[in-house]
Length: 178
Image 1 (cartoon, rainbow, N blue to C red):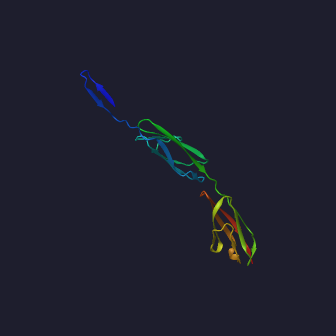
Image 2: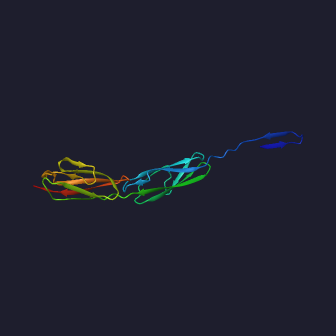
Image 3: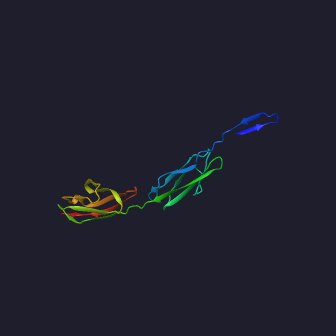
């Protein structure tokens, strides 16, 4: 508020309100856990500040969204600048999870009428999908086939997935004799 008094003495008062922009933050969204060979989109989103906004990422990009495919854990940094030149910055970490490596074995060879046991060792795996001869399928880590016949001989495949969604497959052979 300003008050002015002239020589007559008349007084005039005027006022104005100057508002401050709300606090300015940089938010980053995206998948922070990926498997080797995958990519993820990171999206920067300002909270507060005064539009319009410009973006500057640590990988050199100047767009609001970036697609990244790191091979190891990587920290990405974004700086957002508003129209008044105010800046805010945030870091976002993307981890690359290991692929499970299944190791398949069995109690091979098995006599007809016996039990064929299939084994897989996959540290960190939580989901399994087996397939094999004679329309065999199973979602058990170490399945068995009772009373086998020679039709059970052949190639068995297991697909294993860990808790981070990374997966791989392995093949093993089993034989059944008369």
